[in-house]
Length: 402
Image (cartoon, rainbow, N blue to C red; front, top):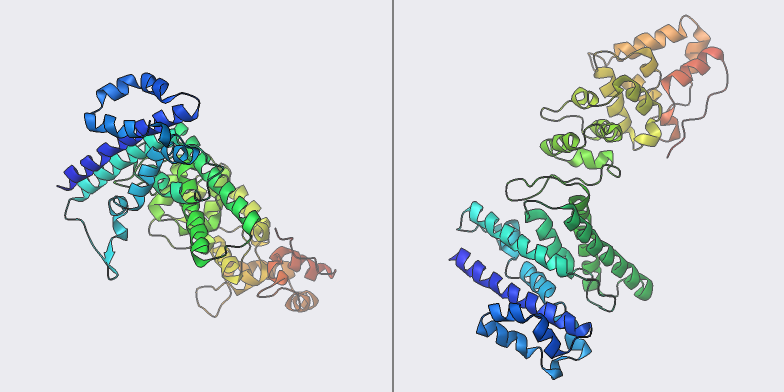
């Protein structure tokens, strides 16, 4: 029954498409009679009920500008209303709740997913008819909902579709910017909520149009966005399988691999993916560890937890050579624990002892160095401070930030 009701509902979309095309031809200069001639074949193939429906909008009294504006958007408006109302819980089953508890369809998941795909194909037809509406006051969010449904549920999204989807997003951005510059901050809670919803939807849609990815069962969920703009915190939040698939899709992108390596500072432990698994994807693995650590303040930033985590990752590798050790943040390296919690990491202890040697003055100067738990002093490199302590020169400035 669900399938029959859904199919019957979708039939009315074609009628909306025909009205949209006929109305746009009238808007663009044709008379109602000429419009009938242009779409004579489509009208002849339609049922009598559909022809009568179209004819209603070809009357002279229906040719006013305000009515034409509505009719020219009829097909797009159809998917907008259906996506937010009658089809909402088919497209987003997780939103179906009663008294806060989830409700499930009695139909199989396969049928629900198949119906969502059928609706997405309807949305694709609507996308080809979408056009910007510079005069509309209500265009901010309404086209983002069904656009998201299209991108999530359509099995394959072509480059042409992604390009048109980006146009919708850009038009929404212009609308938000215009509204903000004209009216300032939203004057009501509902307007604020609309703006927030628009921002959230755009943040969800943009990865889907910048990172093409095959559909997973029922939904496209593995898109993380353009690898040129992805940052380590986003990768740290990603599911392990999603991250691996993303790295596979963009194999050979060293910049992306570096962000993935930095993500381990924010999320050190994953079920099976290891730091060295990701490092092996880089074209120059050992050199990139040196470069990332040298520019750690600029590339990683953040607080003591991130610095400490990066130092622990470097020290936990099978080998942490002196040229890498000297680049670690001094405080984080010295505070890294060895086999017992109350011991300094043996590699750090050995390196510090070797550099300072038997010089009491060097040891005393190093103990008084400006390294600190937080603040700019936390970024002093171990080797820089050790060198200044041995040479008796002024303490260097901490590495620059972003």
